Length: 272
Image (cartoon, rainbow, N blue to C red; front, side, top):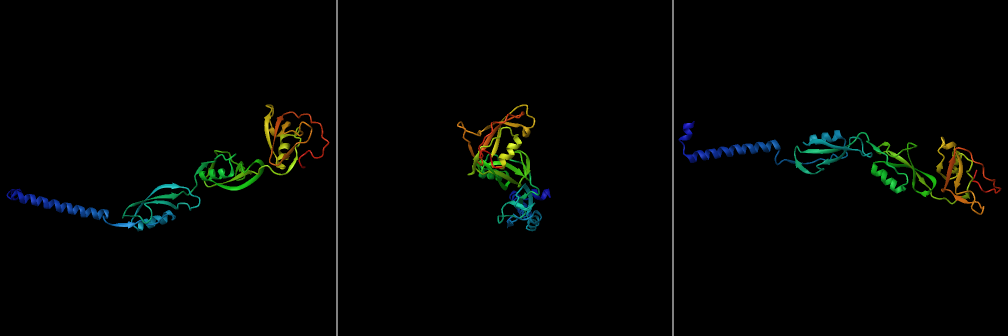
């Protein structure tokens, strides 16, 4: 064989080598086209909104591979539903292309409850939405801060900011009604326990605030009111008036104070 090659002209051997290289390259290109489906393309099917098992069947039937890229939670979609696909539907790509999917989580994640107290209703609603929560019921309570969040409830109980709560949960907001039109004389709270004063005021649409409590007090509910603001009378001895939604501040003591002088007027207490 070597003798046959060496006895041929150089130009003949060069042409033979070139022809052999062309044949090998052609076979390689044809094989590559066959293995990679060169020139074969197909539109990506729509799988967004479908279940994972259904999407898997569709993509497999159309000749696409799939990879779960991410999972998020959307409470309006069924568990394991396809939320996003890449490439998008109707995109023309090569056969055997991988389609990356984002799934809806089967169980909602736990998130931190935000602090909504003091926010307006609109801002509280936006904060809940941004956190992945929603407004449930709205309950109104007499308070001068109209439409301001006074409390946040979950399943009927106060929920502290930072408490873990399932995404998508409904939170009840307690809102202030603002100062009402109903007026009556400022009641005398001195000598009442804080529990009695609180129940009576809240029952009549008023609010109570503890300004100071003696260090010796062990049970605030049983402590006694020894001072209040606004007082019952002005400097001229005339009864002061108060509206629903307004606030009375109190100072508490462990000892029951001496009762103030009785008043002979008949319209100086909150309604019984």
